[in-house]
Amino acid sequence: MKRFLTTIVVICCFIFFTEAQATISFFEEHIDFSLDNNYFTINGIFSFANKSNMLQTQQIIFPFANETHSIDSIRIINLNTLSNLDFIRLKSSVIFKITVPANDTVDLNIFYRQKKSSINKYIITSTQSWGKPLKKAVYSLSTEKELNIKSFTYKPDTIKIIDDKKLYLWNKTDFMPKNDFEIILDD
View 1 (cartoon, rainbow, N blue to C red):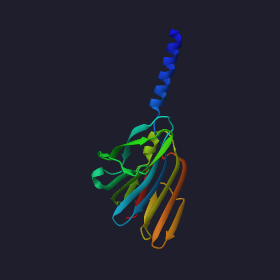
View 2: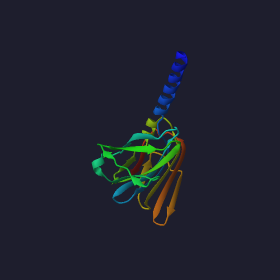
View 3: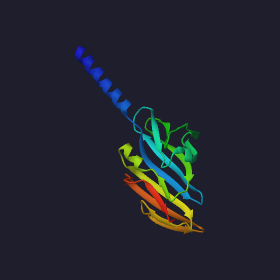
């Protein structure tokens, strides 16, 4: 009987600790970038999944290429609940918590803008910290037609001209970025 109870306790502990260690995964992002005369704007939808049978809450560190004092209009919205998420500014990142129901997903909208510079950078190498490539990553960049871009870290899949704008498009699957997303302008 003692052996039976010990076995039951071990099994219950294993199940508890396995469930407790289940984490939220980051699996998809859709980001619209824009460059105008003054600002580099980032407006993205980030998708997170919880494949466990328990509600999961996780602290997220979202990095910026610049120090946060130079970034304005930071907004983080849980699109499932349509609620703003509180965050704490650090030197070059923000920290916030996300809660994902059991066996479900949550989409966040993260918006911010920073002053335009000769090198406009968005940090995507942080994806590596999640340990898995993004199943899907879709990026677009909208600029004035006359804006001269010297180079991109990632070559656009498509370039379209619509009226007085240029639209650059990237569509990635199983994407594990090795470099950050940079848009380098002609001087």
